[in-house]
Image (cartoon, rainbow, N blue to C red):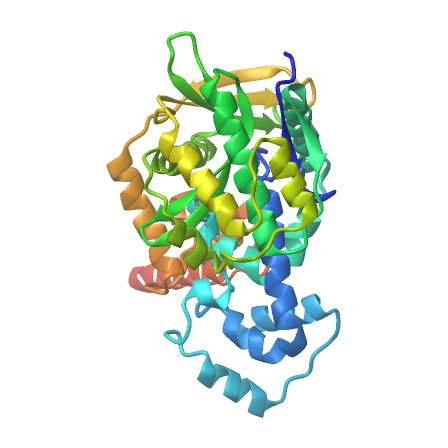
Length: 401
Ligand code: SF4
């Protein structure tokens, strides 16, 4: 396959790939996930006590949060009873929504998929980001990352661009999208296509692995998954992967229908429209025929391109599974798309982020998920479920005696 394009990369680590927590390895949202957790940690670093209070999940024990804070700061913390008392008082569950507590301006598709596997696990991954970061060092994650990068480099070069502000980071993303939109319109295949939009009032971002037209002229989304085992995934994993592809379609279709507005991007992401872009970003924009000076200029150019483009909504959603060891294909699955059901599921997940309900662990029928969970030692959900099971057993034996 010949190379027909390039993608601007924000820095040397910009090609980081995501690891799906449900064990299939996917695209490049990992960078978002890591930068979110890093910014969460760095923002709480100057006053770990205050921010620890804001970060604690109402259903996660204060011991867990204390451990998290200690681990994040790398030191032992001895808390007095007085401090604990204050902490309990200020942890009124209605004080902050999880979006506020975890300092999130947006959610990623990866995080929502993670949540659909086990919500409690998602909460722990935010409370204990070091555990997740360590897990990302596994050989399988690195292999998945290499596989995705080599696939991307088959069709496009990666051009490093140094950035200094959040506006420049978002400008690079928009310039990449603008360039890929043109390529897609010309009938080329594109990879690592960012998507975003407001879903049920929350700004959601993701990265589509591949978009291309098939022989029937349908626009196809391919979500690449690499697997350690040379077999198709379990139905539970498959369900999460389908959810991911569905979310990408919802976001992409919203973009091409012109549903994403300038104020959505500026307000949700708290970006400064008049921020002047650095010479490097401006020069790279010029290379693709876009003359810009500020972030707003890039935003306008992007929105005009999207509204004038003749890109259709995505016709077909496919999951492509590859074996990590042999790099050979395992199989392809076409996923169904039921927008009404998807929005219903999404509402349920977002209710947690809005602070409308407590986080939940897995149902009893899915308790097998806990066996390989990174947080099984500390998870309050499993402990309370075991206690409940013990009480039930005790009740049954009393009835028999
Ligand atoms: S132990 Fe089970 S319930 Fe707890 S976070 Fe892990 S998967 Fe979820």
